[in-house]
Image 1: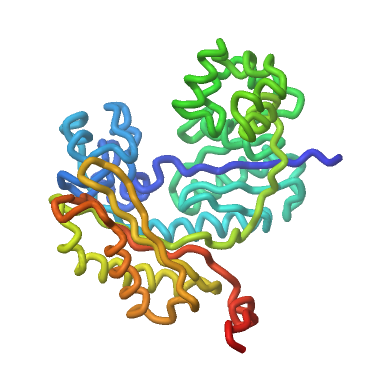
Image 2: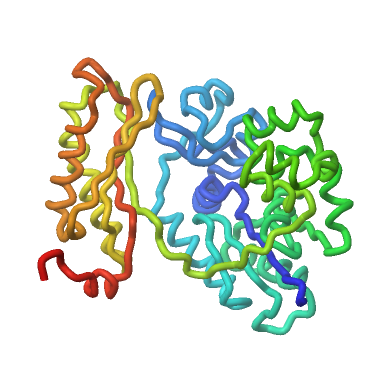
Length: 355
């Protein structure tokens, strides 16, 4: 069986790096990409800001306290998307098997590459050099026999690093790692493993499959495989869109009755974004976060997919009627989304109920 050659590319502090590249006055300074405000969260932080403990998704007010000298820059997502497209054009010079995970990272299968480089390491090095020379940005890369290992490797020498895990080095590399480095091992699973005396991947490898299945159900098989460096998932280019959603955080907590203008605006954005997709969404979702940080969703799948922004808006607004928390309940966030995408041809082929 041919051993896959997988590269995971992760742009370094992408949003912040683009801002520093485009504004020389920001270079070398702690940059935080975020809107200022009590409800804002950090979208990205430069490595100068990260030294002060600033991280993505941190409340902006906390980031400001952690790094008083930080320069706050409001995010410019259209510009980041444009740069991301240029990065992907570089990827496509080497392979068509590119699976984007977000604007700033992607998997590449370079088992065979377009320009005939002898090793995956050389491909990764060439991609990083081209990103540096053409876009004046840096990227870290991980090279490994599968996606799971390549993603771990890309983080190993960040920023601006390259790390390779050869097939014969997998066991040696994985054994001393904390089990928390494995995907899917969060706080709850980590605590359960701790109770079993499992702290490292090497410890986890000592548990047999039946024990893991008994403790963790279907996830036990995944833990068993990851502990041995096994991951057969393929790099899937052009993965179909699963959902389109937009959300907004209020400056102050608001009751449900005051949300109509925001829901209408978000529905327009969601509808506009969905028009860029060749497939059709069948289900409308309303997402809410209470002042106590509890998240709830309500969804509706009409007999036929929403055919206009007005129809989408009506459904989103009507979903408020299914939120039974009382008029005194306050909310800090609302979102509107579309899910359950189907091919247009499939939708046309579905018979109506009374044909």
